[in-house]
Length: 326
Ligand code: UFG
Image (cartoon, rainbow, N blue to C red):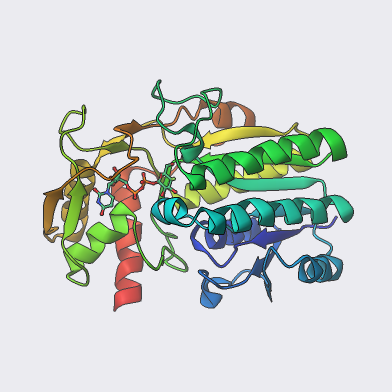
């Protein structure tokens, strides 16, 4: 059988870990990436085809060459703040780019599509832990762009039989336990890599965005999920689709939340170094708590996090940080 999977954004953080997981399960990941944010040396488990998701001619050529049985779609811009100041960039790449990719899937008879979505589709949730049925009320263009693609996938499923799984990540973190790939965003905005930079002295002191939230220590609560666990969920979702499962959307998180202070404590414990930090104002758009109800992915996909305890997340991210920063 044909076990080739086209992985858009496969040179990026979650995409590269998914390629490793695919290859371990006998799939061949063909990475389609324009390397605008991805890293060529993160493509290690299959060929790299350089291309932009907005370039339909190039997409057709790559699909005709490799005949993938499925698509995993990670290619997207992810900076929430930038999406507010430059929404066109997000709607063009994330929405129009995904539309072209779905049309290519339809035209080439590819019927399985795994989509990288986000907890940002829920906006400011009223109920935590958040079930998939919670209202989809994004509060920024990034979240809107991801929810729009989920809606387009639903409609392409109805009209054209394109079957899809939308996977809504909570806070993706950590790095490959073998240190073969990891997080390298530029600019970096995520808490754990910034805390590691501060601990290592390669970055500025960390600013904690608000300590007056209605949480036990006043800082925001997030559900950190190890990127290797995310990667396994993508393979499980793909296998479910190839096995005849219906389209669906799943939260990917642990169901446990940690405050920013707890993350700083874990970084200090794991690295053995202090995290220089100060308290700043709240960051606009940050909900007090975002925690997944991940029970549907467990029930339907047989997935559960295996290395997403906070110490394992921080330890693998620290090992990768040391490898990258020497
Ligand atoms: N934080 C700080 N200081 C920093 C960076 C972050 O205090 O310098 C705090 C944030 O306020 C938040 C927590 O650390 O409470 C985590 O922040 P991240 O920026 O690492 O992650 P977010 O929760 O903001 O964002 C994640 C994904 C987004 C997604 C969002 C909602 O990275 O893509 O969840 O699902 F949109």
